[in-house]
Length: 338
Image 1 (tube, helix red, strand yellow):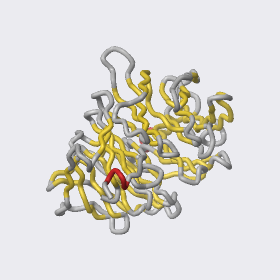
Image 2 (tube, helix red, strand yellow; image 1 turned 180 degrees about the vertical axis):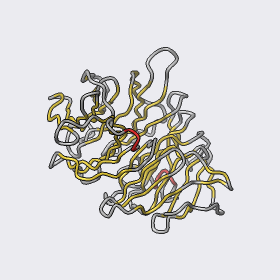
Image 3 (tube, rainbow, N blue to C red; image 1 turned 90 degrees about the vertical axis):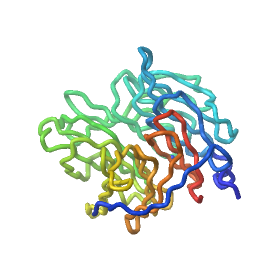
Image 4 (cartoon, rainbow, N blue to C red; image 1 turned 135 degrees about the vertical axis):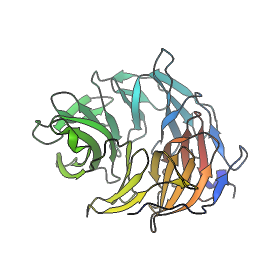
């Protein structure tokens, strides 16, 4: 079975010492499919819930719109995007049904996945966006000088159910990156308490059903780039610029502190994603993609896709394929069983 067949027709502790880790380098032949978009950094990549569509945000700039949203039909096997939308975007998510893409930035726009023909939006600055499973609505993180809110919004009803982050509405906080647990109820988000900024960033766990913040992790960190839940929702990977910390969200125990290395040199960490089985953790760096075994927290492999530093990662819903967005703008698709 070829790697592409293995993907179907589809188209997301302790410091580890240097070790002899197998390296896999691929060509552009049958071993790897490469999706082409703008030749600028691909800083976010996602796959629709049904695995049919991939989308990525590329940095654009040059005096015009800051970003482009590129969309590919993975079932068709085409390597060129079928739609490109330009705008000042900061992140995006597919709705739970996959019919819509919610794009956040200086406003929140909903675009129809099939043709990207409809464009509507909110008029508020949004820090992040996460999908509500099996629904068209999404959760949005919104913060200003007065309070931090979580807002539900949909393409048909617009924003509704604004919920203060701390339940009182008195918390003044700047919300950063966030990730929704697979159960669709727990939302992990990073925020900075404006009343105590020296304490560093806080990771909060928000219960969407109870509509309240149920737990907090004080990190003392000054920068957190991304959060990712494991498929079972028990582990949470926290990406900084040089490390990945993994926490047990139930016991609050730190399970691992990973510092990817090539030889004796530490690498910049740029993206993180769990495999579908939870036994693999992929870390994108400026030196390719590093794979870790989550049962031992040891590095087992390094991939070099020749697309530049790995800025973003996603896995297909069936768990067969991974997608890596590079600084070159290309999106590498590889067989996770390879």
